[in-house]
Length: 158
Image (cartoon, rainbow, N blue to C red; front, side, top):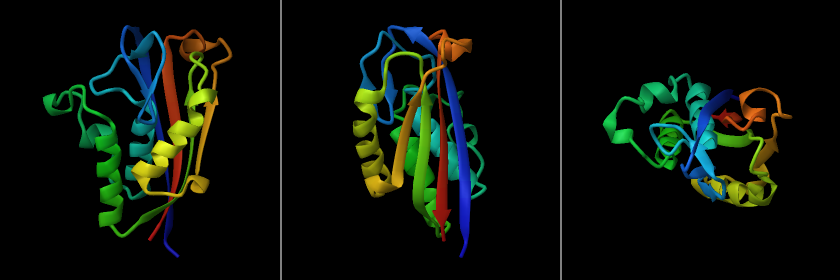
């Protein structure tokens, strides 16, 4: 059985007046990521996890932040391309476990919608997707509300 694990991480500074999108879902907040694309930290972490699982590099190699074609891009495109790449190599996603780190806003009201959207985008049963939300406990850039981050672990099988 050929199985592989991919690990992804993303962090963005937060900026007043920018929209906040997590897992493809618009989140009500007064700050959003200071980023080249839409800055969806969860989609970015998932993209890196998929690419990493099949040793295909990372999001910065595939979608460089100095390339104008990715300016303000919807990060679902990154995730879809990474999924296409693992499928091209003969792999399928088995399960996803991810964590979003943000002091505010509270993400509990959004977790089911994020999970449903991930299920649709990844074409994976909701029972195989876990989304967690953690604060920074008022410590460091996340805890002070200056940044947002996400981690993702993905299991793929040939």
